[in-house]
Image (cartoon, rainbow, N blue to C red; front, side, top):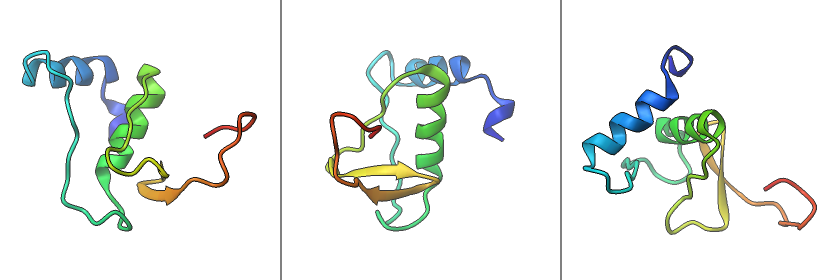
Length: 79
């Protein structure tokens, strides 16, 4: 469904809804469960070239709709 949307328009609409304050995507999913919010965040990052960080979970990253523990971060590998 995301591929049918224009990511620029989605981000503009989110910014409009928040009155120009940085939007925060939230949900009530447990951190170990699948979450559509992760898919949206990954999509926006890829499409808009922006970084969307997970609050309160700096040692976790998103992968295919799940939060997963970062594997030995390195200066020379992708995070």
